[in-house]
Image (cartoon, rainbow, N blue to C red):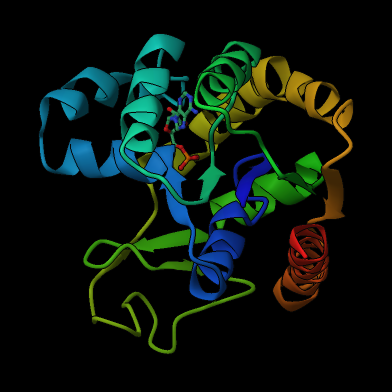
Length: 222
Ligand code: AMP
C-alpha cells in the first residue's frame, strides 16, 4: 500500500502517520522530520535546508525529490508520505518516479482544516527537545508543565511555529500546496477528511478504507 497524507501544517498528519505506522507495515517518510534531524545533526543536507526550514519557506523541489527518491529506491514495500509532495512539481516528480518502477499510489488522505484552526493549533504546539514527541497546550498537554511525559525533556516551540513564520507557511501552503488537492481529486483514491474530527475518528475512517482495500486485494488475488 502506498499512501499520502496531505494537509496543511498542523492538520494532524504526523499524529495519523504514527497511528498508521503502528498498524501497517509502511515506510514512513516525513520530509519535515528528515530535514529537522539533518539540521540537528549538522549534516550536509541539514546545512543546505536550514535556511529554508527556519524561514518557513519550501526547500527547493529538486533537493526534496532527491531525498525522497533516494529513500524510496531502496525500499520494496509500501510507504506513507507525510509532508510530501508539497508542490505540483514534487507530485509530478513522484508520479514519474513511481511509474518508472511500476508502482502507483493507492490512497491520498486529505486532512482539511480551516485557517483559524491551523493558527490556533500551531501556536499551541510544543515539541520535546529530547525525543521529538508532540504536544498541544490546549488539546494534548503534557502531565507536568513544560516537560515531556515520555523522556522528561524540555518542551519548546518549534522555530517555524513562531506567529510570523506560521503566517508565511500558510501563505506558502495556499499558493503551492493547495493546488495538489485538485491534482489528486481527479484520482479516485482521494478522500477528504475533516481534521476537526477526533484523532480516533479520523483513524477509524482511514482504517475502514484500508481494511476494505486489503479485502478487495485478497478477493482479486483469489
Ligand atoms: P513540516 O514538519 O512538514 O511542517 O516541515 C517543516 C519544514 O520543512 C517546511 O516548512 C519546509 O521548510 C520543509 N519541508 C518539509 N517538507 C517539504 C517539502 N515536501 N517540500 C519543501 N519543503 C519541505
